[in-house]
Length: 196
Image (cartoon, rainbow, N blue to C red; front, top):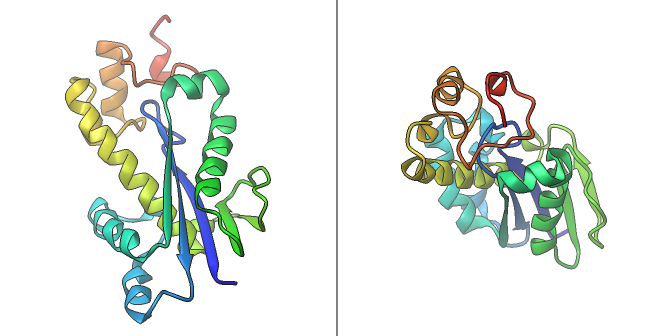
């Protein structure tokens, strides 16, 4: 097998912001010892510091044969449901990078048929370099978006918590209500005092 594609998402458990899925293909015939060493720090993006993810991002861009990023907005998540949105985004990202002779790996969830061999790998971001790379690309892309969105939506402090349910984020929702980036379909204690 020459090509290995991995897909993962970021932002599934957030109160605000998009769900971002990424897929990364490594061409095993073209990755040399230097790339292997540089990619040795890959792991689940949630286990890495922001600085480590930021450092790995350009390394992955250079080493990958193909990369795809798919984003789904809060209103789309509300309309289709989180799980369906997640599976669709993972599938779309893999479909953009899959090639002949490629095995497609997804973190945890099986995706609909892509016309090539595929496997769902439980804990895949700790077991597959391609999935771990996709995890870093998805998380870094999403975090950068949320830091930029902070300026357009002041007060919710998106640059600090990037949409996750933190005490500061919940306090901001209590003070300000929800922004256009908030997912209204979530059953979160942060929303209990609000009426939609």
